[in-house]
Length: 336
Ligand code: SF4
Ligand code: MG
Image (cartoon, rainbow, N blue to C red; front, side):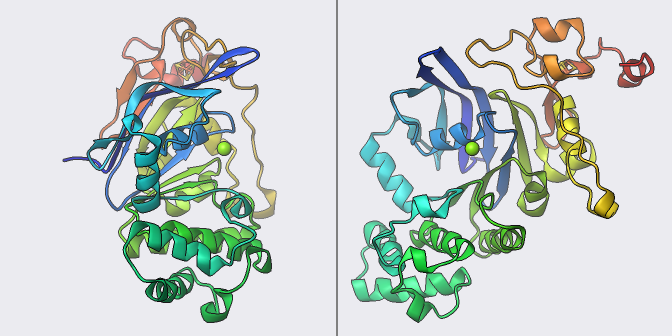
C-alpha cells in the first residue's frame, strides 16, 4: 500500500564560506496514515533540515535539495513550484515549530491567525470561521476561548502559545503535522501537557505526525516508529517498541545510555556519548560513527555499512551485523 509520506534518498547541501556542507546525505523513511514517526538525533544530525526539505522550506541559497524525492499523498512535492507548495502547506501539511513566538504574528489577534488558516484552505464565511476558531482553541485546551480569541500572542504563556500554534496547524485539517522540537522551549510540566495534547489530537483526528526531537523521552511518550539520524544519515529505524527493547546500532546504544532512568530516581547517571560528530564538509568514507564507536573495526572506516534487517521494518546500518563480523560478546571480552 501507498504511504502518506515517503522520503527517498533525500540529500540536502548548504553552501558556506567553508565549502559545501552535506547536511542530509541520502535519508529514506516513510509515514503511514494515522501514525507518529519520530526523527531523533543530536543537534546538527540533519533532522530539522530533513523536516524543512519535506515542507519545501530549505532556504535557497545557501541550501539546495541535491537529490532524492519527497512523495506526499502520491505527489512528488519537491518538484512543485513555491506556490503549489504553499497551497499544500496551508491545507494538507501543518507545521509546529520549537519557538511558538516565531510562528505567531505578534501584531494579530490569535483568533484572526487561526481564521486565516480556514479561509485560505476552505470556502467559509468569516463568521463561520470565527466559530470554528473558538472550537479549535477549545480543542487544544485553551480556557475561555470566546475571550481568548480576541487577545494577542503576548497575552498568552509559552505553553498556551504553543497550543495556539497547534490550533493554527490543525485549522486547515491537515493529513500530516510536522513538529520540530515542539516542546523544547517549554518547562517540563508544560512539555508533558503539550505532548499529551499532540497524542490525543493525533488519535482523534487520525493525523499522521512527524516529530523531530533530541529527546528519547518524547519518543517513548508519543511515537509509533522512530528514525535515528547521525551525521546526515539514518543509522537505525524501527517501531519504538523494537528499538527501545533491542537497539541495534552503537549510536542508539549511546543515546539510550544517556537517557535519564526514572526508576533510578535522584541517583540517575547520564552517560554522554564521547566525542563529536564528523565534519560534514568532508564526510567520512565509511561509517560516520566510527570515530566515536567503541566497536569500530577496520572495515568501518573504509566502507559505508550495509543495512541489516531485523523484521517488522527494524533496520540498522552497522557492520557488527555482518555475518563476517566478530560477535559483539567477543569484542566486549577482548576489552573493546
Ligand atoms: Fe561502530 Fe562500525 Fe557499527 Fe559504525 S559500522 S557503528 S563504527 S561497529
Ligand atoms: Mg533543530
